[in-house]
Amino acid sequence: MTDPEQLDVAGSVRAAGDHALLVIPPLPAMIEAVMSALQPRPRGVVDLLPAAETVLVTLDSPQSRDPVRKRLLALLARLEAGVSAGDLRLPDRSPVGIGVAVSGSGGERSEREPVVIPVRYGGEDLPEVARLLDVSEAEVVGRHTGIVWRCAFVGFAPGFGYLESPDARLTVPRRTQARTAIPAGAVALAGGYSAVYPRRSPGGWQVIGTTDASMWDVDRDPPALVRAGTPVRFVDAGRQS
Amino acid sequence: MSALRVDRVGPLATIQDLGRPGWFDSGVGAAGAADRASLRLANRLVGNAEGAAGIEVLLGGLELLAQRHVTVAVTGASAPVTVDDRPMGTASVLEIEEGQRLRLGFAASGLRSYVAVRGGIEVSPVLGSRSRDTLSGIGPEPLRAGDVLPVGPPPRALPIVDVAPVPALGNDLLTVRAVPGPRADWFTDAEALFAGEWTVSPDTDRVGARLDRRRGPALQRCVASELPTEGMALGSVQVPPSGQPVVFLADHPITGGYPVIAVVVDADVDTVAQARPGQALRFRRIE
Image: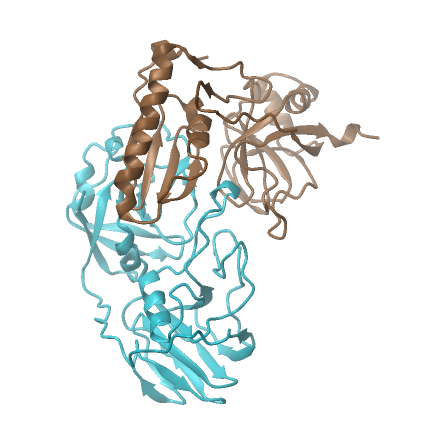
């Protein structure tokens, strides 16, 4: 998809106030490498929030900003050196997504068994999704169940994971009008991501099915079924006998 | 040990401590007291650890009946405090005997008062915190009349002062310090935020404070494309297409899709959390 050689690979570390830094790595595919290089969390770092193209780093005090920024800049320099030296392997976007292995970083790849989520397909927007993609509804289900998704990041609500597809063949826009209430367990698509709504909430994603899987349970450890980096496989519950 | 019965609540009263940092990977934000400095002060006054759970009271209207002797302090918004109808000072140590009634009237300035009880409110923590996160619906339910609140054992430390000198929150123009944001370069002139004055809109809650232009230039974007979802820090000044900025407070969503033009410095987030609808506010730029 992207050729690292042809990109402006300059990443940056930007202030997000006096208690946080926003890390923009040279390539979005390096988010995972940034995350694993920050495990365990460096001194002064409270939490890390990976998203589509950035990692937000929250700090315990303004005094931590400079030392942590220096460390992040050194990390970005290492990643950039990897890109120009050509030893940055951007693996095939399969089987579990867009992990980046950088030599020497010990990058943690998701070799884990996928979390399996049984889905009853036939959501309200399934016909519209099929129309947008110009395929049959069965093909939409086939594509949704035929790959291992990977949680790129979480947000919106506790337990709401943005699942990324290795082949991007289910990329549809959000609905033109958001629904005021989407039930818990709704399985939906938007902007190249799939997600399961952990609880009833408003939302603009295209609903293609429902699941009984409990995405969020505060009494469970960890409470979220899907977290950043978790591989996920959907199965067609209607096909199970 | 139950010690306080809730007899009335005003618009909203929640239990808050200093929040639950460390749960971003589950999609959970920090929450905690909207004005942390006021909660800390109230706790210090009664000899608690600063992070003990207290009650955050929006605008006032709270009435508590002591079921045994308790030591409390009220800080934050200037809600008149009475014990059995006798006026009491705010930011002072109050000894309330069994059967006495603590009342908070409606605040004339500021939005949120904090009631700390020696020993702390000991409801069950959720993910390590007793904060109510109003966005996620995590943590103890908002208070309702009839609730009985457990209070923990008194800490070893004793109150060391009777009253803290705290300037009253006024209704005048507020100045808050902010650092240019990670997406300041998405605006034709990010300095426009710091020019002129803003008005706090009625659309303000624990999630964020929306601002309207009082006087000064509009915020105009030079990058029209959509921002891929990214993490949002506490105090972020996010600018949706309307150009009306929102300052993210305690229960803000952890990710967002609109560019952040500036971020209010941590210490001044407490000030924004106390700004009343209609109050004027200006941003002072610092690096």
